[in-house]
Length: 108
Image (cartoon, rainbow, N blue to C red; front, side):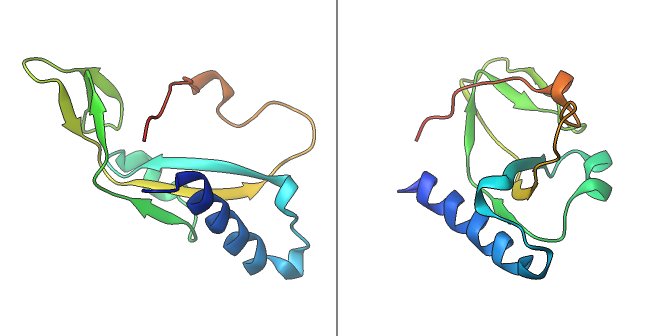
């Protein structure tokens, strides 16, 4: 990905355009990500978005449940496909999974 910010913005624009009849606006969109390895997330995945494949993670690995495990005897491991989508921001209240969010840096 040479320009990840531009790529994600274009995904956001396409999803907003596809919901034109619902009057979605770009500034009301929030990102959603799903790890394909997590079977329980398959039912929650939206029908629109993009899959990112071929990324690596340093110092950890994703297990079959889509959770991070310690990585032993290796530095890098392949990340399962990640689906990136956007949904309309809900006014007020807590995000769906705010307690499960772990902020971490992503480097290109």
